[in-house]
Length: 44
Image: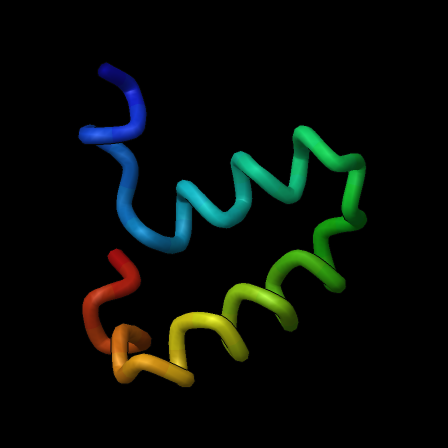
């Protein structure tokens, strides 16, 4: 399945694209979501 091959950051960018969220907003939201549980260092 494609979701298994995406990094956490790629997955969040993918979902943002589905909802037509602009790139800058998507990155800001991804940064917040990945920092909260301590996943920012594993984003790639």
